[in-house]
Length: 219
Image (cartoon, rainbow, N blue to C red; front, side, top):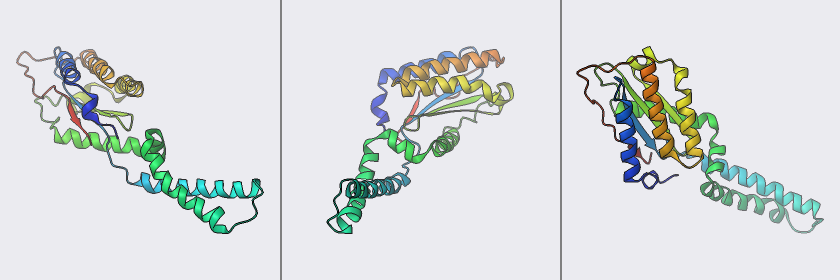
């Protein structure tokens, strides 16, 4: 899983916080950037990789036995041993390869875990606790390559769900290109413009109710 603490320098964190501050400057929105290395430990990966490795080893052993014309030896040599070796090396291969781990987990479960993690973060960070219920959580899940934008009641009344798709796409592309900081900063700016477009105007007595600094967690 990504070592999220090392991916974001102090300068990165300051730039993200500054982007949130600027985006909030003309609206009543309160933006909370939240970055997590992975949303779950995904224990199912190990046994899925072991099963896949065993099947691959079994098929490979039988193929070599039949196609190579090696008719000698016992079933242990051509069937059982390759399956056991595959079962051992499958989890190792998954541990070494993030794309393989994501494939074994499946897109639907990755999306579900990111959504659940965002909902938990929304409560933990008390994004709901603003005067006009205008908090927004932007969760970036690095391992999952997922982004979730959750708005509080005041945001959801003004901004339709589909409006956030561009924000999500920008950050997801940035993660895949290896530039999550730049993508998140740009997406926060997009959020600010969306709030302005939907007339979530700042009040004269507005105060910064939620800390702008990104929350960075391994899980």
